[in-house]
Image 1 (cartoon, rainbow over the protein chains, first blue to last red):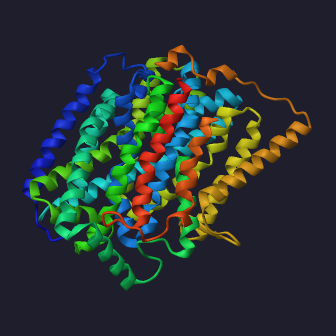
Image 2 (image 1 turned 90 degrees about the vertical axis):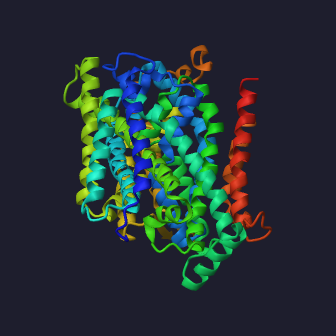
Image 3 (image 1 turned 135 degrees about the horizontal axis):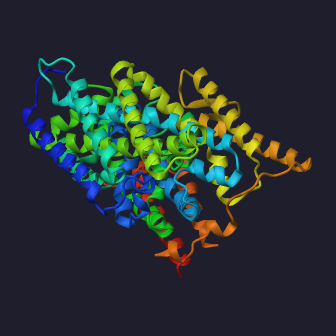
Length: 509
Length: 56
């Protein structure tokens, strides 16, 4: 960086950060309830209606890292980076089909996590533990990447002579976040999401109107990108190359299947007030996907604007170059808040898993509600602290690689959870063996490719490794269940009934 | 079964050969881009139709 400090940008940033901090602490009083109960702290009492859920899930799923990384990928490779668009289009019809069933059964049985559900459905501690560990493991690097999103913004605003400035700012911002999440639970990100999302939409609207006007229109932007890719050569371009179609489509499909298995997505979903709230959100959340598609285009705008940087610094550089400093500060605040909301929800989602599915069965079987809430609060602190250590002391590459593996891992709980919502045909040991195989195969295949998401299958071409592992996972689960059924082995119990998955009067409204 | 409508976005966005071209462009956007962006409201609309048919 040039070493310049953008004071105006910092000032605007500080104002919004202070505002959100006040909102975060005040959230404890919003729809006041007993926060020493995990249902209140960790799920907001399941009382969030359509609009609160829309802001919460939108703020949760479209993260700071998305705003930084998607355009950076588009900047580097072109059309291939747009897999995020089909991914976030097909995710919602899928959500519409499955998540209301999950909400219903979790409401009926007071389940807080997908591991709670799996334990009730299959009466298997081990399967529930496997799913909880997968969720926590996949979430940690994701939180770390949110920090990276903030760090990039801090560096763009500059620190002048202050070395380690970005680290100091990160520690400060995260300490504040950790404190109000500890105090207010899920209510904090839910309220902050209103501010954050409104700011992101203003930022995106300004960017798609102002920047193309400066660069001679969208036609000129695409033409500049095409020219630049042609000069660089390789598998880049504003259209997909022959071998890229399969990786593009399978990455989109696999990512869409994995999205709502992540603890932060499940937490946001279960906090809804009814199953119809989720259905309405499956219709309304795509509005964020339009914003995402336009954000992705900033990769091309950065090419056309000849930003002097590469990689994750592309978007902040484009912002600084295109907007007056005060508005750049506004955009940077929007992105940084875009890190805080998901980081808070991710740490709450992971804390719910640790409390309910690791601490309760293996450490203290007889926790009172107050003890549960206290374990969850402390876990949320520990998880954030862990992510901070990650970012400050380990190379960035490490967090990115783990996050990529996290997506592959998360997909391996699909059979137990999603199939489990529709059928009890599968057996717990089959699902557990399938999960183990999927985890091992996915990790190994990715490792052999230098921790990349695509593996080339003979006769098919490049396929998303998460999906390859999922197919093996399902095949083994089917095989083991089928053999066990032939042998007539005894079945474990099922705490749920068919009617638990359907809507009732309570869930309608 | 109206629910089958929910499968259409999967076909429309995952079959890349359907839309991996340059022309016709719209407001400077190559076909690839405006086609995918158009699927966002379309998928939303299909989901809404299914939602409406549920609550009759």
